[in-house]
Length: 547
Image (cartoon, rainbow, N blue to C red; front, side, top):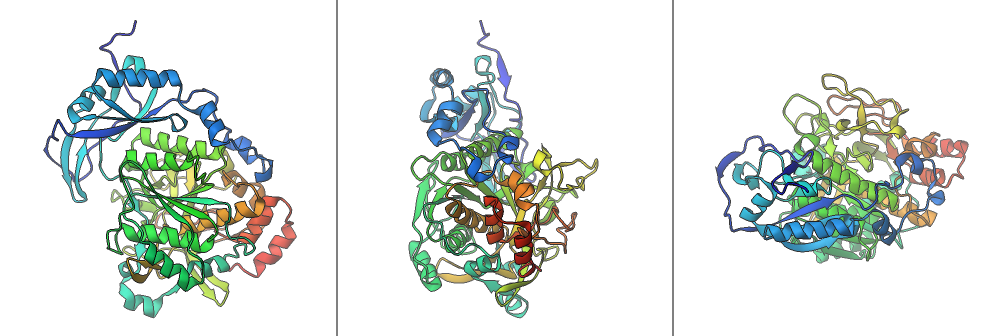
């Protein structure tokens, strides 16, 4: 019989205090908070692997329905019973059970949850605000060993930042008028030769937001100016967060509106579901799993423009998010993630190179940034986005956590710029216009402005994905293996970016850690994904569009 006093630490749950944080005391022991538990899957048999999916074109794959996935890979009902007994023992309430997502949300007092998971919670002051935190590992009773794979929400520090760059950060409107240009999202789509015979009808684009909100009047005004019917936009509340505009166009509202307006302009026929969640590891995870497993809206693509350096995440979080993205892959859902706006350091001032997560997950399409200059309706030049030490630059580099995927084995991924030269998952995979000086014209909180950042590239690629899905009458799903293999073996599928750097890494012919495979030629990619376009035709088309 299991010793009732024996406890087991959850692997990868160790937390450290935020750099620069100051301990200010203990939280109210009677304050009620929620935690999210991630449980092991029902079956030890994993969903289709990258190798299996990579060997198949989109029309050859059989994606699992959400119901099928839950039946095969959801939480074991017996494990849920054990968690409920554990909750009862410690005086916790079961607030939400989602077997398909393998999550269960428990509520209790700070005192009860501290005892249940053997942690000491403290309050800390940090330049970003006050947060409730912990140090060390989380543990569970021995009878739950292996059942609980992660516990999120005990620590409520802000987990991610939006990867958006307002034009004023580049030196103000005057500099933009003198040195910069800007584009409507529809113009960017035209420059990248997105398919024009489709509009995303029948698709749902999920957008993850960790703050801010949108105003329907702004959306109606913006799309009316574009001559486009406003897409159908729905706000979905996760973990108590809601569509809550702050009224500050340079705050999180800018992220929300940029995401909706770019995706909606590119694929106006698609439904857009915006999942609002608290900016914590628990909130972020719940937003992603809710979107991926949503049986009502059934998103075919998820756009994520929030993230943070890999080093700011716990190993349990990195693994939990990546498992969610693996689930998305098996259900034919493409996940597009911004690669970051602070170059190869990702904003960490330790002299080392860092990649941004969740873009560094091998199961997402990581989206880097370029500086795009057009001449009329064609691209005249496209280089790596890097506006210098203070102006921002595309994120990208080599993961310290995720190994090199098999589909990147022939991409000439270089060693990490860090000591030891580790070779891991290379980010980004693809790119698009992100420089605020060649940014996107958007409307936020009643103001017309210009934004850049890789935040714009994730919804741009999400919109393109919706167009490709409609064109193919199937989902491209986990597209990474195809982009590095069958679909990108001929010139013309991408505009190869060969000029510029993001700090520690430089652009080069083929894949590189600044702009990945390059920016897209949408029509050529569509032909490649059908398997019908010839290399010669793609090369011919490419010669008229790439710089």
